[in-house]
Image (cartoon, rainbow, N blue to C red; front, side, top):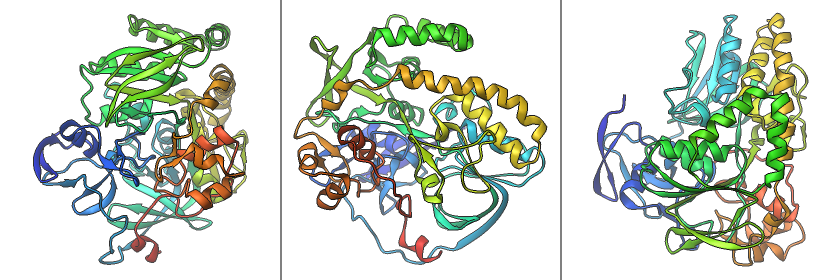
Length: 503
């Protein structure tokens, strides 16, 4: 139950609740701009999930805190002025050691299913997630969804906890609150999920330009959207789910712009009739709930307009351009798997996903991968894979075969999604010379274009070396230039030197 509390933002009192994120509280009272970039541009939150680091604020005297991942507490002091990147650590935090039979990283639907399945046999399970609440993007802050805390007593919940790197072959180091955790395991299930893919275009760094799922996440954490004019654009089924959610919260959704063609959508919809009829029914129901909102296929954004915040977006259908006034642009071009931890552990990767066998086992012994890590396939696939992995590590092989039959069907949906929503060629040419590609370091398209490869560009421009560590610009430069990076260095998230010293 949310409690009414008071915090201060730039020394001014602000009333909010304990279920509201600091980012949402600041945007409600101070406007969409939450901090200044390295070149002095006003920036606001983008991803809403702790990936982009564009929501960094000074909280209770500690700078560079991700405000979208921090819930408000009574008496909290928030400062939006630019603070130092690093502050002295007064003391090395304690290193707490925990041992589990099964350690699950990620508490979305797949991770929750894996934890519940593994704990069914009485195994001790540690469930780790870096968000304040469990449930992932789909179930978090949604009372209509299943309970996000399985009731089995052998599950230990570790929220607001980030895995940094592996101490050895059976222990991970994690940053949790004011302590470092050494998490030992016999079996490790990776359910790290996915993040939105962002493609740079002129104006995409304006406050008010959010990821599609990013705006949804911020609204779930307390940002008021009622009455605001919203354009939803990009690619994939997430656009429809976001538009419905925002409309339910009172947003004036003006348009849904889907970059894939009507022909691709028609072919995809037709394939569902015989392969996944229940999904077709769900899509029809969703379409009915979205009635009245214009849907434009083969349409994409080319420019966000405004000064200090977005006020309109220029769209094109390949034949003509037009401008749509808006207060917010929710824009995402599909999802990409969060591969940093699997890569750091040495798991084999193929075509952007973790390679697994029929039992969700990776190339590393006793390490399993599920959900979006193995292919972007949505809720059903993640849950079934989680149930299989949990059953395998707990030795309940009799439960695996039935789930595998379900998984064959769920995985067939992955290929259909990828084909239907493949990004069109025109999107490679959205950025102009002055478009910022690396938001952390304000590196432009022109600066990157001078270099022959990603390594050279990184050394000369610092592209990918900011707080997000390439999570936003990495996929962007791969899409724009074909530059890939197959290396991940620990720690995979920024952390205090004290946490590293104590390990």
